[in-house]
Amino acid sequence: MSKPVIVVVAAGPGVSGSVARRFAQDGHDVGLIGIDDGPLAELKASIDGADVQTVVADLTDTESATHAIRTLGDHFGRIDVLHFNPSAFREKDPLELTVPELLQDVALGVGGLLTAVQAARPYLSRGGRVTATGSMAADQPWHRAASLGVQKAGLRNLVISLDKTLEPDGIRAVSVTVRGTLAREGAFTPDRVAEAIHAAATQDEAGWQAEVPYSG
Image 1 (cartoon, rainbow, N blue to C red):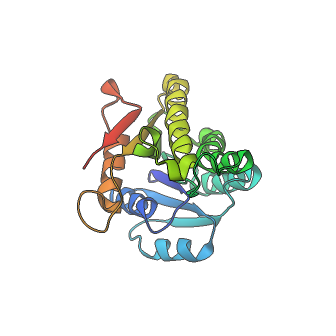
Image 2 (cartoon, rainbow, N blue to C red):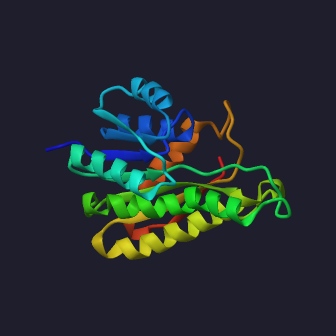
């Protein structure tokens, strides 16, 4: 029997990398999707004991992102966990931010999840999970990065809708709302956040929560 598989969308050196390593430790093979070969190669080299495949894709390009996920799905023959990590940080307040800029950021931070799940759906089966890295910016947006709060609020909303849509097929979705600032030490290191995401993905389905706060 083939090993379970996690596909990490927007894989890199932070939380997404820690998520990839945490699930590899749990026995998963790993698919990594990112915008640049270099960080993907470095992350791949840091993962032991797994078949690790990488694909470069522009996540705001529906065709490119879809092709990347299908390439990994075809290679592994399955996707058991789809982890969505990207967001756009643009330091502009609501009076500086233009509508095209807002829509561009939402296309990555929210629209990218829609593309990813639609592409992954044929490879997901009962017991499959969709996870997403959320943020307290959804509830407490910083006005100087107005589009980030919109992205994270939209991401959480979409995850809840996806969870309700996928639930009849035994597939669940969850966003982990990180209520702190990422740091190299303490409760909000990438590894600690990744552990919270792993716990959310493996929570008891009988009491499933589509949003799980992580406060350290």
